Image (cartoon, rainbow, N blue to C red; front, top):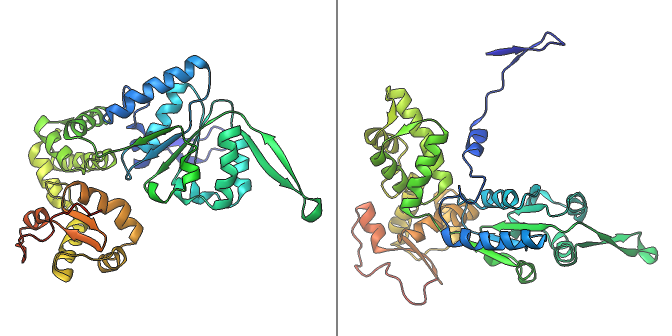
Length: 348
């Protein structure tokens, strides 16, 4: 459908929401809508309520967890619960201290300032952030050489929400300045099913209970994955002429997408197979493994490994990555050493 401009007479295509926009519409806006992570939600409810009663900014919030578990969504939910503005950026986009200064000086009182991938902050920007977090002031150097002097620029009290998939490489001084730490875990099967039904309702698509259960089981305990798969299953159902997403539709769709009952994609299985066939089950270093499967070390460590470890198929040791006996069983392979891949007290 096209829409004609009243002033120019030029015909423009009517805006059709893209998939990213539709995905955004599935995100919860309030803690009551946020499914899963119950202990975290209960604590945040207390902290937010107390801050509002004192009419103060919420303490700075540090969010830790693998991609797709809802860190960005929770930051937006916190802003909504506080009734505050929300300003979002990511560490790699800030190249110089002035980039951070520009953002901080434009914040209003009580705003939530979200920095994604906070582990990638440059040292000079991080040091500037320390004072801003503690004193709500900025140290800014004016002039050069002997004429240089430091100005203290006051800024409005705000809540910094920092999100990371790699808490281990965030500096100690930065972590110590966060008053609240939330660790995301992979979602429980019942929570994943609840997300499927909620998202299906928002997408106005019918899904059978058994189909929702299988889809939840095959989604890596990750809301972002289950929402993506739900949209694909809707496509398969529509293409086959089905009025709702049924169990046969899910089974056929997962087969087409090469996703198994544990939610492993082809690349997940390739990782396990490479370790078994090329490196006799491991151990093998992350860089060597990444090269072998044609992925970056960051993608391997941030996306694939967390779920494989959570599912008990992979383990890290001081010498590298090793598959477990469960991985052999899942792939239908027989280990040459029956005890190979079993964990030890000193595995990491």
